[in-house]
Image 1: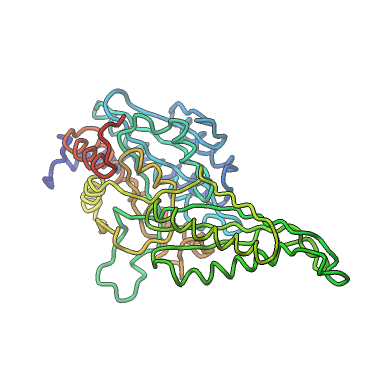
Image 2: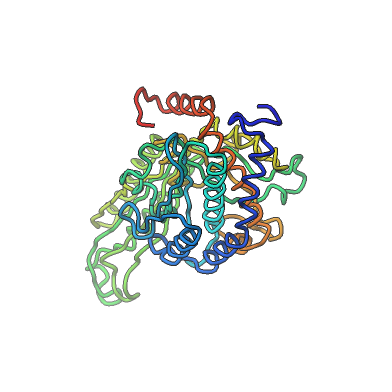
Length: 424
């Protein structure tokens, strides 16, 4: 791509001017919404304040917003433009129990809101065909909100879906040869979720313990079994869980106890194979303690592995370079341990899920840690989110206008997922 021209036919300087001008013009309201979400963390499917505050903001800018979209109370949808292709930005805004926005979803929402507005205003100023949509996607943290949105048809007819996610800044890494501002193409693990309930029989723990069947012992045995299994699984796999119920009183043999586990690996198939082995650990715990067991795999909340569209990543990387930011184009070979329902979206349409660094000014800021929640509320994190938003908006404009980019993106998607026929 020429350094002076985008393939939209619009000079790169003009595209950058429109997008940056939009972000700067709305900086105050973007800062306000970012702070509101960060200071009022809400858990999955309970993001009522975030939903209302974002919708209020968009309506104040004269957008027509569909609240409670697609059958979800805390989802919303807003669209701008007409004709042509359709690009969607995902906005996440749910938090984590006890540690607030320790995954930085306030920054995700802010960057997607900014990217949507900038794309919409740039397309309007250029009188260019194409549509851009902002989709509120609740409950990413274990709730599978995007899976429900897929099932409801929220991504039907979509040509591409973009979002950015904050992560630890490589600029804090001592001795690093290159200090990256972020990564354009990242990956994640597929994930399955299981709830396991053991049933035994109550008895007085001091007077007649032999009359009981201890469901908590079944939990402990299962936990140990899985710990032993870890030595015989691939390094890419992850197994982790918590005790949800362990009994009522110390002097009562528990007749009911439960666990909840996540199972992760590099693909949906490998996770399914691992799940079969893990279920044997639970059944062995039940057998050893003479308890019954029920394993409920929540298939509707299965997170697929993230497969980013590299054409979109390439366009985005070029735009971030033009903004003076250093983004690693392909970070898929780096270690991954997290999972996201954006992986499911990438199986439906060409998807993009970059990572932008935060935490330069906060010690030990890593996701799902209270320090990361603090980092997500800093001015520097907000500025990094806005820079990412500018790159995503410029990328969206290219996808909407340039037939060559769109065709490359589509061809890559069809080859990746082996589809001969698709609606996109």
